[in-house]
Structures are given as structure tokens and as C-alpha cells.
Amino acid sequence: MWPLPWRRWRYRSRVSGTVLARCWEAPAPAARRPWVEQRFLVCDAEMSSLDVNEGELLSLGWVAVDGGRVNLASASHCLIATTGSVGQSAGIHQLRDCDLEQAGSEADAIDRLCEAARGRVLVFHHAPLDLTYLNRASQRHFGAPLLLPYLDTLAMEKRYRDRVGQAEHNGGLNLTACRRRYGLPDYPAHNALVDALATAELLLAIASHRGGVDREGRSKPARLKDLR
Image (cartoon, rainbow, N blue to C red):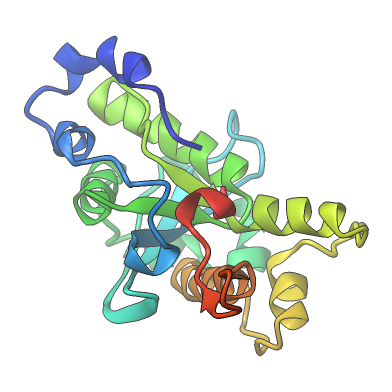
């Protein structure tokens, strides 16, 4: 999804001078350029509840993709201090209250994420949940939602499967299932950085399979707009 400029315009005075403002000032990605020429930041969040009205962000992980390759040197993982207990969600992400005692603030995590995201397209697997939490955190910190361009590998795979008559149901679009269809190995799930790396590999696999051929029969890479 590409945010419309007018949506940012209404928040311009609130974010002035912040790292989010610098993100907004970066040139927009060129949708007609090949995906291998694009710069991505693949992200994942862990939270204490699937209900944004009850849960808190617990950790963020991200890694950059440049020139069609995962840049492992860019990988970052930050823990976020909470005001309450992680409760039963610890059984999913393995983060305990004691693990978060020395964690950084939500504001610091959002600042770091925005700094890494400048000039890049964000990528998530099941973007609505992560972005709901991130936008609320951004509202608290900057007074505005992120309003950054993003792709959703789950949505990309769903559109493709529907188009070729291979619709998936009952968990067939979760990260592990999507990776298996492209021959990618299973990773331990529900660590923000591991899931970000797993999603980055999935992005490369999907994009590589979405290319076409030119009039001379030579393969050509998919354009960014073909992935949206």
C-alpha cells in the first residue's frame, strides 16, 4: 500500500523535525522499476495480545533487503519495556516479564525502526496486525501514524493463489506454509528477528517467481508494482 500525500499533509506540523518526517521526505519508490533495484525493510513485531486494545508491543525485528539480497549486517532486534505482564502470550513468543526488565522504550524502538526505514518499502507477513500496533505506537510518539509504503507477503501470496485457482485455507497462508511452497526450510517461529529474516527470504522467493519474459524470450524481473 502506498500512502497518499494528502494523508501525510494533515500531520506535517506534528511530525516536523522528527525521524518520521525525514522518512516522509525521502523519495517515493518507483513502482515501475524492477524489484531488484528497490530497497526494502522487512519487519516483524511480537505483542502480548492479538487485541490491540489490550496488548502491548514486546519486540521488533527487522532486516534490509538491497539489490535482491538480504543484508544480514542490517539485522536488528529490540525488546520493548511494558507497563503490564506478558501473561499467557509468553507461550507463543517465549518472552518473559524478566526478559523485558532492562528493555528499551517503545519510543526508542519506533525511532530506530523509522531511521532504518528511511527510503525503503516496509514488508510484513500479515501487515494489518503489525501495522495496527506500530501505527498506535507512532501516534503516541509522533502524533501521527507511520504512513509509509509497505508490502504484505501474505496478501501477495493470497492474490497469486486465488488468481491461479489454488486458493489456500486453514493456515495455508501462514509464514511457514508459504515458505514451504517455495522450498524454504522451517525456522523457529515467533521471534521477531527470526520471523523478519524468514519473511525476507519469502519476499525474495515470491519476487523471483513473479518475473516474466520479454519479446525475445529472455527472463525479466518483476517490477515493484507487480508485487503490490
